[in-house]
Image 1 (cartoon, rainbow, N blue to C red):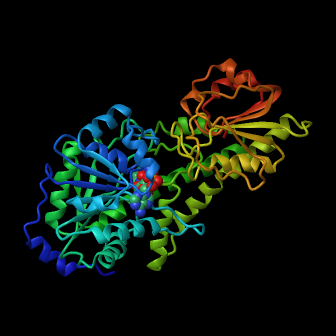
Image 2 (cartoon, rainbow, N blue to C red):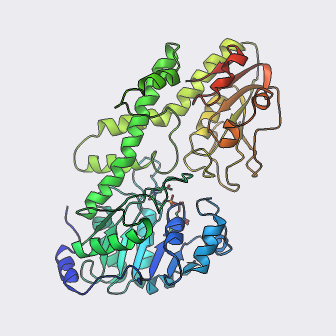
Image 3 (cartoon, rainbow, N blue to C red):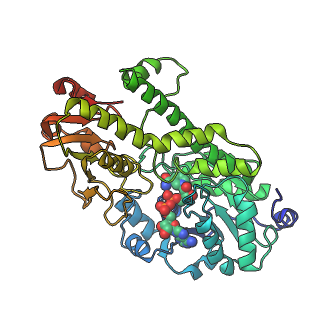
Length: 459
Ligand SMILES: NC(=O)c1ccc[n+]([C@@H]2O[C@H](COP(=O)([O-])OP(=O)(O)OC[C@H]3O[C@@H](n4cnc5c(N)ncnc54)[C@H](O)[C@@H]3O)[C@@H](O)[C@H]2O)c1
């Protein structure tokens, strides 16, 4: 595959291009889970950061000091706004930046192919505002080649400039993990690559100002793109393996949690846990890699088989729970169930690509009247729940804790929000009818199993 503007890049690198990490004006396109923490980290007195998002409401909330994703604290956001962060929905502000960091979504289509639409639209917006000497760094997760073969030409078309001669490309994958308070922009090693060695080094200095210089300078943009793509695909495949083991153990009456506790005492055992794989990273990024693999003529067996299993894990869990329920309560005609947790991950408000609604919908098909309860989910998001239409949402208005109703035939702990995991034993048990089943796929409430005498199910 050809690299856009390879010859021009040499010409550009000969020019005196060396953005001063302390002075360069930055712009961030896309102020979501990735873009806002990045923009806020860079913004400080003396460093101007133009934060552009096409979502006017999101921009206004940020300008008011509120990050609805919960990733940037009110104090940090206030500090960033008082420093150099300028949230804006005006794309013309992008022209004022020396370096533009693109952090827009990279979802998949309904047929599980990369949807490069948001990236292309960002390039179309930026292109007419590009000026010679600017640098465009992509942070969105892509497959190798997208930055140079797709985004570079899109920027050229929209700007009339020549990539590598008039403007340069960089790539630095974002590795933050929603809800993770340890692995933050300031603590994660940053992989950085530039279209020229000089640009790579300059970007390394720039990002190094955030994390004490913890930079891995990749030899090319493609290498940096590939590194990110395989990080998430590896995690997906490993979880799929443990999910498969969990399904086998369940059928032979073993707790996978007991098996894992024993196995992880071996020094080189990889410690993954079974569960639902949702969200817009691990459940999506492997399809970028598999798409590339198919484009270059290799059928990706491991990557796609892991995806297949993880995609159907919610159905598998619902089927096992329904089977067990019929064993313990065969006579309940229209059992009432609550699925606890609707978001894709514990203690994050994001419902996108969550597998919990899939689990709830499958239970509804087994005849349960299901309510999906989530005190953490951000209100106003669309939950694509059930084709059956029998699943209702409840508790998404921001209250904290367990449902108030009791007498339930089935309670499923689908997402381990802290409020659920740490709830008092009597409060949890009080949710259940005398014949009710507690389903706890991740084994987070195993301490309750002895008190439930057979009315507890886990993987
Ligand atoms: N969320 C994560 O934890 C995470 C971690 C690592 C990498 N990533 C990757 O980072 C990228 C961004 O993910 P995210 O989770 O921040 O997405 P997000 O959906 O939270 O935020 C994206 C933001 O971009 C805005 N946007 C979309 N198109 C735009 C455009 N053309 N111009 C301006 N703004 C636009 C949206 O309004 C939204 O506010 C994706 O490629 C993702 O795979 C995400």
